[in-house]
Image 1 (tube, helix red, strand yellow):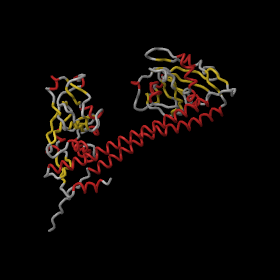
Image 2 (tube, one colour):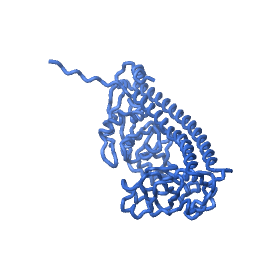
Image 3 (cartoon, helix red, strand yellow):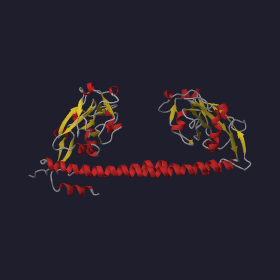
Length: 433
């Protein structure tokens, strides 16, 4: 689709004028409405925060409701009105717009402005415009605040947008409607392609994971090989060291690396050489420490699957380890041990040792009883090399999916901005003497 040629054809030589939003409709400031006011049923209500966390460009029904008594005190949102956010913690979410297309009248509250479009403006046309780089540039001029960014209704009214055929409302709305129709279709197509892509890559990812799990378990089964299985806590194999008190409030912006038990099943994979979080030097001195090659194991979770998840620490420096985790210090290949913790054989052995109801726990003493196969160092390294390749193949899809979706989104944004790339009037030439 060539946006410029399409616009030229659509405009067919008609004038385009950039007009202030305040001249194209009535802007009404919202008032009141807190989350505690929501009810299970009642009058449809739109909270400003939901516009950038829940809704898309338009909606026919609301997520929330308020009582009839409260609704009488709030500003009303009619069909075709646009609710615009005035406040957020980041500039991107300020000025986000939601077109309300519900049959029942809705209400909104503070930190939001209702745009009631006049005869020269289509609400959805304006909503699409708020997604463009031109609008972002305009709102940036009026943004105030640091931690909380605000663009007031008064300043929002000053933002200019391109209006085709400004002297003929019927023709102007027809052109706006055609642009909206194309963007609606392109939005739908992008969503459809993204869904298909997600389904295809998810299916491929699941297939690869099954293959990976099969070969990992097979490689580490050592059936009929004569490889000895020994208790992990046997003195010549390894020892378990309990972690020490470390809470999230102890984290610092910089300092010495640390691993909190919860991060093992939410952030880390099989191995790591850098930490997500840090603690101060003073805290580190009294903490339990993991050395390079140690395994760090989460001993607490709300589900059995995450109990005893492990990450091999491969960084050069020592790091602090939290309670509800333990350190496994051993003379094996660190990644080999970490891969073993993922096998069906390990899961089967750990199961009888998990205790608790709501919070499930394992402990170092019981982990020490679990048997691990101990082939030669060369064989451990060979198995790790094979599993690393499988791991890389699986991760390539996991990482590739967000990239593909981002590319589709950028393509959509490019054509959307192109459709709003109306010609600007040329500045008059300076008079010559």
